[in-house]
Amino acid sequence: MQGFILMTLFLWTTLAFAASEEQPYAGLESREIKALSKQQIIGYLHGKGMGLALSGELNGYPGPKHVLELAESLDLTVEQRAQTQQIFNAMQSQ
Image 1 (cartoon, rainbow, N blue to C red):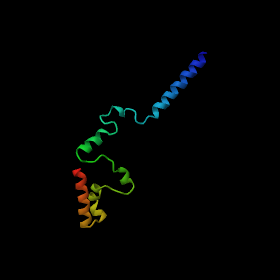
Image 2: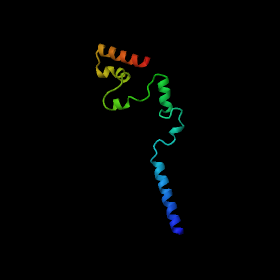
Image 3: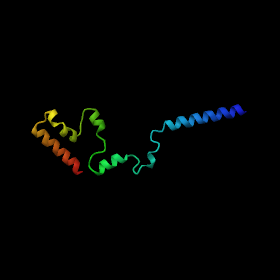
Image 4: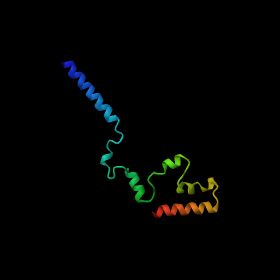
């Protein structure tokens, strides 16, 4: 009987530990806005962005800010720079 109790306790502890490792969002429930990090909130409030362009940029679609930063190396025309600047300005005003 004692062996059964020890085995049950061991299995319960192992399962509890494994379950805690599988909870990648543990601790996020205490955030002011649960789905956003403090850095993302600050970026949003200051118009700096929230890192939401990452998936686009990783797939070859940079946001307007980065296009403007790389305008020379991208060899943008005056018209392309102006259009990109308009997009960036519109994004900032929103």
